[in-house]
Image (cartoon, rainbow, N blue to C red; front, side, top):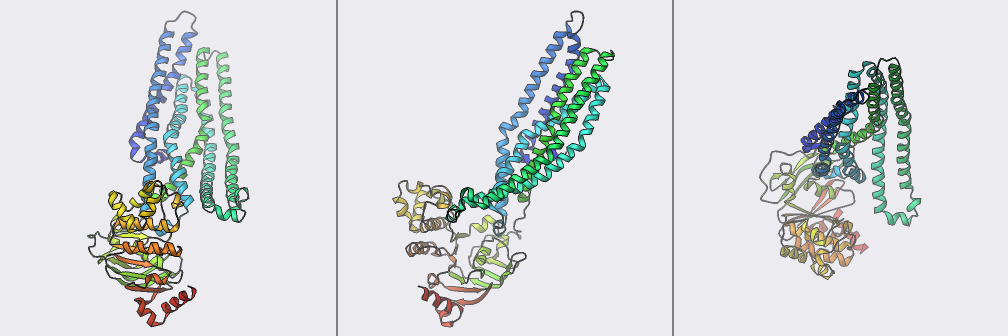
Length: 571
């Protein structure tokens, strides 16, 4: 029952097709048992002293059972070919939806390699258990039981021998399952760690080469691969003796049964045709019993994989308040907002802040003062520990993720472009946009001329994470995407921090086109980018210590004034 529930969880909305597949397997197995049972009267008819026309009747019946069994086997395999890919796709879509609903700050705490392992290998392991193992397991379990019933009906003494051997196997099988359960969990953890290190190695290959830690000399890869090999080796060694013992019991039972059948035949307690037929049937009982331990391991792997999948699916998204109408005004208000991570110091403390509609507000401060967290709370990457944030008088917790997303565009310092064409990356902002709207967004972002200079223009592939483009080019494509999305609120998180002067100038021109008529909040390290801001917020240790326009803050000759003078000296 546990395995059946496991399989149904994996099957998801395709459960009814999976149940149908199991029914076909059970029918095929029953017919297979019937075909083996026919061997008894068939052997007796063959060995009859006088010509016996019943032989051909039994041969015909035997052939018919084989044909019908093959028919139902093929029907049971239909699920593998038709629905198995659908199950994989559905599981991955469900995981993607769960990750979408997960608070982004929580998601960023998860290891990329671990998530990759769940979306990849764990889903495949679970689906493989469903596609092949389920039907094999039904056959491996039901066939010996049904054949044992058939043998017992023909001769209870031989049935008793088989029953004793089957019972003797049970505690060993439980032990093997416990070993597999422990080793599978450890191996899955090691696989996830290995995937993480491989991703880290590929992304940081330049650093590894520069420090002579690439290739066979990479200690970070060597350590995790060694751990992975140790776990695999330990699991195999721990179970090997028990598997061998299990197979020994099975083979020993067959030897005892054959010897006992021979003894009965010599004593004329069992005729020879029936003896031969029952031994043949007994051999078919032994075959699946030899594989049941290995199949048990595969189910343990599938169960561990499903548990990791369920941990993601069961993760709680952000709570939503009573739905309200989408705001028609776009001023932003922080009311006594405090935010802290679990078991960490307070990041933001009692923030009261009003950002008027269609205004530009700058946020500055030293590293780690809470600037990025402040703007991320607007996008609801997490909820405040205390307080509320409102857009147009509407608490953002009453908006769905898609409703809130329709109000916001975010341009980050580290731009993420997908391994696709420039066109596809810009259209992420609004996939239904026309060609004219696409080109207008690129022109406004000061990137159109550069795109047209490329041999394939807008159909140029940008490479993974936009690796074929410079930082300024990636940033302007990101701004074009935000312009195309055309939302009333723009969040800029240090968009020019890592650019050279020429690229910064081009990006600043693009930003000027983006923010016209919008409510804009901009985190900046370079204070000269905020001199025209309507308001500048100065943060220190999670609290607002100054607030005002550039001129007023300079006149105050306080924290902002000192930051400004320091940057002037550096330039």
